[in-house]
Length: 330
Image 1 (cartoon, helix red, strand yellow):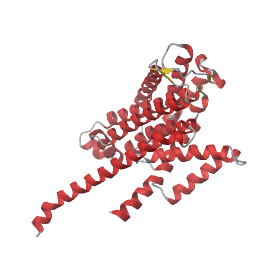
Image 2 (tube, helix red, strand yellow):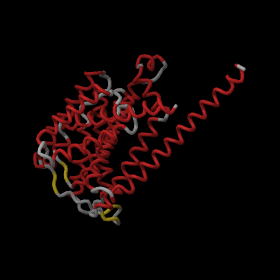
Image 3 (cartoon, one colour):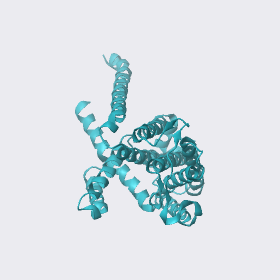
C-alpha cells in the first residue's frame, strides 16, 4: 500500500502543477482579452498611464521581489529613458518612435550597468543609499543639462508614425502599441522569473551565503538582474514620454522612486501580478483624488493606505488573494 502511494505521489504533484499551469494560462488569457477591449470601456490615455507605471513597477519588483535588492534610485532609469527618447524625437523629426524607444532603453540599460557595478557589492540599507545617491546625481544632471529643458522639461515630443506607417497621433493606435510593449515586457519578466536564472535569484534572496557556498557567482547574478530591471524601467519611461509627449523632472525625482516602492508593496512584492494591481490602484487614486476637494491631500491619503496595508496584509493585495485562494481551493 505504501509502495503504491509512493509511486503515485510524483503523479499527484505533476497533476497539480499541470492544473496550476492551466489556471495561470486562463488568467493570463482573460487579462489579455480585458486589455484588448479596455480602451472601449475607459479613457485610453488614462489606461496608457497605468500600463507605463505597471511596467515600471514590474521592473522594480524583479529586483526587489526576486533578487531581494531594495533600490531607492529607480527613477533615474525611468527619467533617462524618457529624456533620451524625447530629445531624439524632438530634435530629429525623421526618427521613428520605435527607434527613439530603443535608444532610450539602451541608455537606461547602460546607466543601469554603471549603477550596478558601483552598488551591487553593497547590501541592505547601504545598497539602497548608494542607489539613492546615484539617482540624485542624475536628477541634478537633468536640471543642468541643456538638452532636458531644465525645470521646464521637454514639451511637444512628437508621437510620429510607428515603422513609418502607423500614426500614433490617434489615442487608440497609441494604446495598442503601449499595450503590446507592456505585454512583451511582462512576458520577459515572467520568463526570467521561471527560468533557472530566476530560481538562482530566489535562492540568493532567501539565503545568499548558501548560494555562495553552492558555487554561484552571486554578484554577477545580481548585476544581471539590476541591469535587466533598469532596462525595463527605461522602456517604461521612453513609452511614457511618447504617450504624454512630455519628459519632466518629476520622473527623475526621488519621490518617483518612493512611488514605485509603494506600488509594488501595495500590490504584492514577489508576485507577478502584484505590481500591476498596485500601479493601477495608485494611479487611479491619484486621478480620482486630484479631481476631488481633497486633491492637496493625495500624498497623505496614499501614505495612510500604505500604512494600513502594511499592518493588515504584508503580502499585498495579490499576495493575500493568492493565499486565500490556496487556503480554500487546494
